[in-house]
Length: 232
Image 1: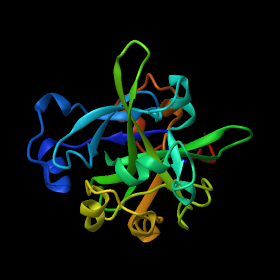
Image 2: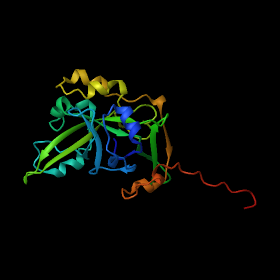
Image 3: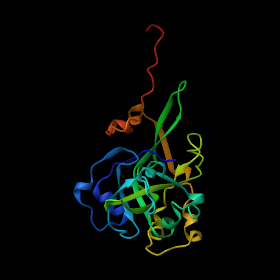
């Protein structure tokens, strides 16, 4: 699963990583605690060199109720071609969602859960594999939404969660963002767990638990408790 992530990068890094032609400066606000239903930065296969914003949580085009979005923030890679909510988008509407890290919660003390910040070892930008849709409300409003694809975890993430977001290899960006309708057999090989040896994580404070907290403190490593001396 992927329920929170961060995007802290400058425009030059985004342009280089995703081969963008332009990136308006107003889009470059650092975000440390991106949550479902919020606007997220997206690169779609209809505009592979341009940044747009979409709401995180897919609303299928045929849906009558937009509240379905809260249950479709993630899509399982194994069943994309079978699920009515995802199968058409998998063929025709794919996207990349830029990130610099994401969060997962493991066992803490007692009944509490310990949050962790997960990132690439080289701290570089990466792209989640996603799908997107356009939904028209009864009032005629057009809403673009997206979901993040998940897969079986690698050995690093497995102790924290039984799923992980698909991080695309940069060599696969072009294929994933192809404007053509592609068969599942051409795309499924891209949707595997990112190599564990290229990733790392560390514990952070519970500030990230509250979506209203969106500051560098969210990704700051948790300091170990002070050890008391014999005469303290």
